[in-house]
Structures are given as C-alpha cells and as structure tokens.
Image 1 (cartoon, rainbow, N blue to C red):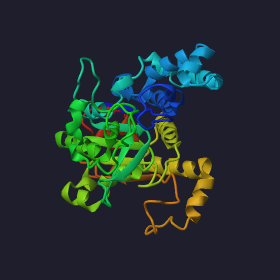
Image 2 (tube, rainbow, N blue to C red; image 1 turned 120 degrees about the vertical axis):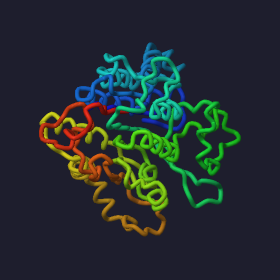
Image 3 (cartoon, helix red, strand yellow; image 1 turned 180 degrees about the vertical axis):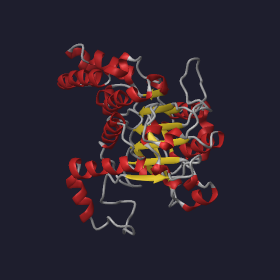
Image 4 (cartoon, one colour; image 1 turned 90 degrees about the horizontal axis):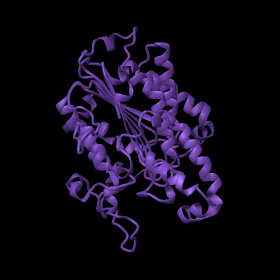
Length: 386
C-alpha cells in the first residue's frame, strides 16, 4: 500500500497571510517552520517520494539571509535595523526546523508556484512543467492533504446572506486560469479601488472551498475507492468543510458517503488557535512507532483531549462559559468562541465502514500487524501525502 501526503503552507505575513508575495513579511512566515517539522515527522513512515511539499522555503531563506547580512541590508529590506536580531533568530530557527526537508531537496513547489491553481493541478494529477510532482490519477489508495494557512469568508455578493469560505495564498492564480473561479461567487468582497499593492485581483490569491470541493469530486469520480484524509489549520476552516454536512451537498452529491475524513481547527466563523497539526502528527507518529491499532477517530479524540486539557485549558473554560457557545446563538457569524476542533466523516467505499473507523496505518506505507483493514486494501494501491 502506497501513501501520498501533501503538506501545504501558504505564506503571507504570519503563517499564511493575506496575499503577500515577497518582501519584509517573509521574515514572519511562521507556518514554514511548522511545515518543516511536519515533514520530518511524516517522512520516516511515508517516504520522500510520496510527499509533496508546497511552501516558500527557499524564497524565505534567501530573503532572510540577505536581510541579515548587515544593518544596512536589514534597514533596506526589512524597513528598520531594530529587527536584525529577531530576523537572525528566525533564520536560525527556520534552518533548524526545515533541516530534514532541506537535506531531502527542499520544497517541491516554492516561490510564485505557491498559488491556488498549482495546488489544484497537483491534486488533479496535472503536471504543468517537466518533472512536476503530482498526485497520480490512479493507483493511490489514500491521499492526506494538510493545509496550514490563514482563512476567512465573505458574502457571495453584496446582498447575499450566503458566504464563500477560502484560505489565502502568497501568489495569485495566473490570469490564464481565471476560468477556475467561475464556480465561485467572489464579487461580495470587491477590491479597494485605491489599493495598488496587489499584482492581481484579490480573489485570485484565494483558494475557495468550492474549488476544493470540485477537485475532491473529480478525484473520487476517477478513483472511487481512494480515501481522502484532510486537515485544515486556518481560521473559519469549519466553513470550508460544509460540503460534508449541509443538506444540499449530501442530497445531490452524497458527500456523507464519500471516503473522506476531514479535520477542521475552527468553527465556521471562529478564529483558529494553532497547535493541533503538530499534536496530531506527534500522536500519529507515536502510535505508528508502537504498532498500535488506532482508528482515525481514536487518534483525533486523544489529540482533542491534549489540545483542550493541556494546551488550551483556559480557552476551553472560556468557550464553555460563553453564552453563545450553543447552537442557535443570536449572531452565529460573530461567535465568542474560538479554536473548536471537529471532524467530518464519510464512508470507506471498499470496506463499507465509517471513515472514522479506518486504521491510521492506512495513511502510511507501513502495514499494521494488528489491522485487518489495511490487509484488505489492494496491494497495487498507494498512499499519497500532500
């Protein structure tokens, strides 16, 4: 069984921010380090050939090295000398956290190739340049997609009560790929007329949940037995998974029967807190190392307990005491809660069981000696991590 993982980090300002292509904001690209650590956790169990990394690694390191060469360089590139010490510390930390990824050749997609269209091409198995690493259209039993970014939502149009959810990318989709946005109502958040800091319309910096839904649908039409395990770590990520729970999607597309397991790190309109991704990967690694039989839901439940009880106990208490915590809040678009983690589970097409019952060993290229589920997968299938 072969697995493929795709680790994606979009950089804008902090973590994956709002449409910043290059320049001084690269110095605060914190999600880059998280992707470096995530890669180091995954690669022993999946293999470098089965991991696709999309992140501004070399671009960020090049800028940091230039900006920290001298006080004059720092003043010119970062805007002020006072951040020189912080930038040198960030350079050292980034090189350390991404050491394994750098030794293994760096990111598969870097610089301006970190854009929405490129990710969609990778998921569709469409190489746009010779040597591009993409998800094979066939022969992959499991694809794990991890997105660490910034997210938000806006009204579908000026008078609409319906929203469109998205996550940010540092570079825009090419103008030639404008047609990809025809499935999205993006006019509800028009560009400021006096803002010339963006090289393209702002919506082309966004990967909308509708676009991802369309790609997931295409992937599963081609390979109906393929499992998709998705982790969204960005604000409002719960809204990006609405296709798994809203009645129209379930009725017309049968999304509740898709072989998908989606983890989100915030409610539809909540800010995310971070931390979940690395906690999940740590516990995944520990369970795989021990050879334990652990289901996806058991793993999530364990991480959820650590997340609330050990990492964010104060936030847990705040959320519980919040008068708008329950369903039916006065203004659901302005919740006073934050960081709610949740799963959405479909059905494994091959085995006929809920995806939350699937053993975690199916996410890797290792078979669990205790897992009948893994043993039942086709030997020709592979697992892919993005």
